[in-house]
Length: 386
Length: 229
Ligand SMILES: Nc1ncnc2c1ncn2[C@@H]1O[C@H](COP(=O)(O)OP(=O)(O)OP(=O)(O)O)[C@@H](O)[C@H]1O
Ligand SMILES: [Mg+2]
Image (cartoon, rainbow over all chains, first blue to last red; front, side, top):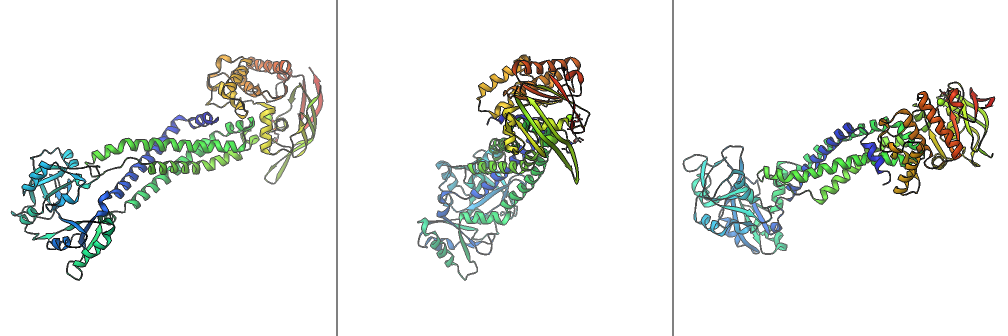
């Protein structure tokens, strides 16, 4: 600690260079923090406390295949099932095909199996009573500036209405909020399955998937097997999973977030290693005579080694901490800006620990060689400029 | 006067690849406590090499060196570093101050190796700066000081931990006449008033006049023509 001012002074010996290096380190850790947040947000998706309580039943073949609506009563009759809801994929785009909104056509009791989703009772009542009504997630309403009572035009990718047009018009009757801000319904629109089924000539009593709640969480495995047994050897065999598993499967099928994050970070940190490694090497080479003076005065080889190592670790820690602090500031803004599509978590303890550990490790690696050089520096040669 | 530095049959051989260069040949030398010795000689005669051996920056290939009765020729690097920290002050031709640190902080450097607390370090460094007449420049960085002033800061740094021995390698080699005289006067004061033993390498006969006597080195051997001034 006595040497801190020496290390600090050495670090900022070349202000511009150090600041530029610091900026690249900060940028790398900013990227690290943001990507890690994205990874975590995907991991957390569907991890509501009730997750294990809810089971999702879909076609064994693919989640695009539909199931007969007659299954509803049979699933409800399975021992251990508390209640059953169902939904269909609608797939709506608002105004521009790029504005994709998760839109589901759902059974009347759909919201009952998602108690974490809050809807004002009066709005819920109005929606229940209006066949063409929809409820929209809080995040969407904010993003598009909708008001209750608005007519919302939505374009389905697949389903035409009675007139054969894929442009549907709905009445916005209420807002879905989520207590902890995590429920995906806050980024979703739901319409009545009945409306959907009666309007599009394509559906005819088919259901996309069933969501059932079990009476006892510890009984979920047995219940899931019993539900799948209902359709065994039929032309619509089912697969029942926890919501988490469904979500994880879905994400895994679309993208390997972990792999993407890991490979981007690998490339970034590899570049950082080369860049900062080179900077540190250069910084120490320039300081040869100063290091020789320290040794002349009586600083031991190990303390010179330690000081150079500390310098590179300090550089990395500075950049890392600034980078992660920026993530803390930026990620709420990004979440908001994404209109709720990305729900970046706060920079958590694990991210900080990981980031700081990474900074330490990189600091030690890039400081290692110059530090050894400094330690082995021969005073007499260095003083003579050899 | 008692002997402070005792050099017995010291040789120094540098190896350049396969080639061996003997830079010092069987040097014998006693330096008395309180002496101010000037070392002169042609370039390449081994002055710096001998000075580095006396200051414990390097070890001889052969022979014995004791300072204050303690052998230093057989110490390892770590032990030598410790020994230097408490026994020798170094003054170089190009001052060798740390450019990022103020004069005050430069002078405090050797004290970081002692047990002194921060306040005491600050106080001692301030006293040393006062002694070299630069109390008012304590906050200045080396680049904000003239060559002569930088050399005086270096002298303050060399004496701050109160070593018995000062070794100076061409301390005035880079200074104008006036600054050189200031620095030499200061060294003389340190020698006469404060009892520091000084060994100074110089090319300049005028500088050597400040010393109590001068030794000549030629091709790695001392030449018998010591003369008192
Ligand atoms: N580390 C070393 N490796 C190889 N040769 C060396 C080394 N140090 C010194 N020498 C050689 O030893 C000889 C004496 O060097 P030294 O630096 O002691 O001379 P000097 O008297 O101080 O000269 P100058 O007046 O030019 O400073 C020179 O020929 C030099 O090249
Ligand atoms: Mg020399």
